[in-house]
Image (tube, rainbow, N blue to C red; front, side):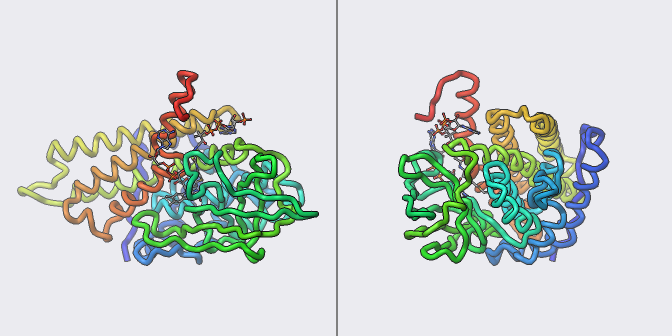
Length: 392
Ligand code: TGC
Ligand code: FAD
């Protein structure tokens, strides 16, 4: 069992920009992670299981729907608080943050923004506590970066619809009680449906064999003539813009989360470099190792500044999809580069589970792929600045 010695790093006094409430929320999340998750995370990753006993604790620290209004069971917090919670979770493990991202931004967010009052009252309070867990089905075996091409579809049948198709790579699907599923109606228009575990013809096989995000359960969603009440269709928004709006929120959380993973790698490498003696001196005294550490904290600081500003813009309702893309892409790339450098600084010890770096490095290979790949986010920026669409 590893002792979690992490200390925050705040080179540009970013804490001065946070409110007392934001700092309290961040510190509470950090304390909970250190006590409840750090001691068990390596074993969970090795066994390839998500530790489900953590779900009520995640609910209690406000990680499920931080910005959902209190009347629906959420914490009613601002976007920077949401980001800080994601940072603290991913500081420990990207899979832990994934569970909270999916629940908050990809399940609670669409129900809150696009759902009926009856749907909000039925689902949101139970999702906020972690009593129910949800998942988000957009990606299909043949439609990843191009979700608009999806073939999952439904036809109307009285008060119900009959849903057919399959989704793949779905975080939390193996144990989720509900799935927010994106499917085309008879006119080919995309709608969101809430599919509940137990509906006949609905199965969620687990996907095994991942070398990345091992402490997060990933699976499929299979719909074989599943009868879903029309009352479970999200009524307030349709079209591809509906799931893409959820992705804006989740990608924002990932931008913060990636800083957490980078901080943990930097913190580990910094401490190790002061303790590890070679040629009669700590390796921290060698210029090449200092270069690595100095560049790491520089990149982390730049990401912190970018992301804080993005949080302000989101709080004002002004952040654009392209700004969020830039932050997600930059910060995940920053974190994966730091993980690789930090691993080298630990020499052979860097590959051991006694330290978190290799796990972060492997996790970040998923994070740089999901919620829009590194290349897709570059093309979103490219389209935004040139007005030219290079996707198709
Ligand atoms: P495009 O023609 O650009 O847009 C289609 C319609 O959507 C509108 N729109 C948005 N609306 C709201 N918010 C946004 N962010 C929006 N972006 C676009 C757009 O105006 C248009 O509306 P309308 O009325 O004209 O129809 O769509 P496209 O087919 O060209 O695709 C664009 C592209 C490639 C950028 C997009 O599809 C994309 O982002 N692809 C990446 C797919 C992706 O990120 N999938 C993520 C799956 S979920 C996941 O990975 C969860 S990981 C879980 C975890 O965190 O653990
Ligand atoms: P593809 O789209 O096949 O892309 C392959 C390569 O081609 C990539 O490098 C990509 O950048 C490139 N490419 C594609 N199109 C273009 C283009 N136009 N121009 C240039 N290059 C291009 N999805 C969900 O819906 N829900 C989830 O909960 C979820 N969880 C996930 C959990 C994990 C662990 C992982 C790994 C994925 C998860 N996903 C989920 C799926 C994820 O969103 C997709 O993997 C991602 O969107 C990329 O799709 P793809 O894997 O099919 O890659």
